[in-house]
Length: 86
Image (cartoon, rainbow, N blue to C red):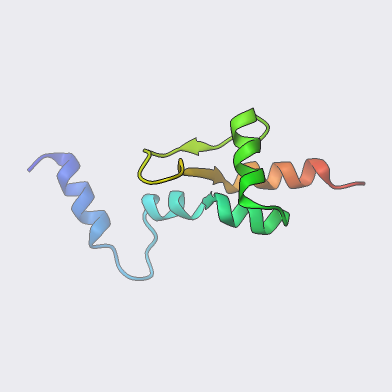
């Protein structure tokens, strides 16, 4: 088995309280629906913002009726902080 295989096994067998890098990355990504709920808009609005380039998102492989996206939590936080009046 290669070194990569060993590290994958180590990550897989991490204790219940241990967070792996993959879990940290997953937690930092939000779905279109999660972003829509936080911004109190419709999912379609978030998708429109992504397609127009107003909201940066990661495009996932297409597997269904709609294209899947993930938005970084830091991107959403930056958007919220930029739009809040001071």
